[in-house]
Length: 454
Image 1 (cartoon, rainbow, N blue to C red):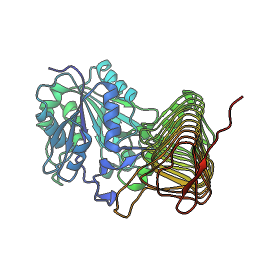
Image 2: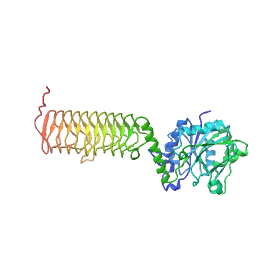
Image 3: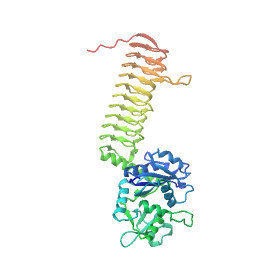
């Protein structure tokens, strides 16, 4: 028997106004599907989630990851019937039930806690989230009695002119006494459209002589659902703003905050600076003192401390401390830059590790390679990793090597420690340590005599 709140998530809606083959609750906002946002909020509250899906929205079941109970509503017969289906799947639950919609990503955990607290304070069987969203809306209007409790909810399409002018509207989140709710949903009846509405619970409660409370939330956008692409964009902007504010309060600087977008799962240390026009997505992590942008994109990338990524794209990459990228650099998945690596304009690295202190200041491509420490990679260098056999081969470059401009290294090949390739060389065979190789194809012409340190 569980005393944690039961979190019933109504996600069986078809979402036809989205005009999409993707279930509505799987559309993403600020880096997470809509359904994932509300599941995260319920997790903050400590609620045990039960997600009600239909055959059309069943692909969203992949988002549950075994952490939520799944209930199928087939056919969809309205929100009241969806709650009945949810309760049948968790017959052991007792105590409190929260009812929320899967397309309301903006509702906050503290708001749901306030809803639970209000129900207890008023000794009500039901508490409703309400907000003042203006007279021109499609939400049901809240009609209160003399004691301040809810007397009824009037659907907008059935409301009189006077009722439509009421400032307070139903936002669609509920806290309910679970024992009362189990009995009440069996008494709900379909309307003329064949649907069973959850809002009819209010009339049942009042008819039972029980109290129904309403929590008027300060920010009514918390309860706004997403039914169109326009509403999705509006919700996403609000989520991005919340994320930026959270990071700024934790010590992150945003220059021109409205122009940069940081996803929900991005981690930023104090003293990170985000320049204008930057986009950070996925499981990106950025260390203290690092400057991102202007106009940079980071996806699923880990960046150490005191780095800089200017006008560059970093995807699935890892940078240790003190690295410099850009402008116009591109790190593709598997790129790993050790401490102090510098990569300038129009450089690209993929599935390669560059050793500490290596410099690649000008355009070039290093893919499927292992590059040693303190290597100089000249402008125009390319590791030719894709062979005529359509296989990927690797290039190895030793410590302190000097790769001359326009060098082509045909993998599989190794350039030894402290070796040099002349400008324009095509390296097709291994170059031993301490060797100078030049030509097409490159040939060893002499030993490299490194300068002795004083």
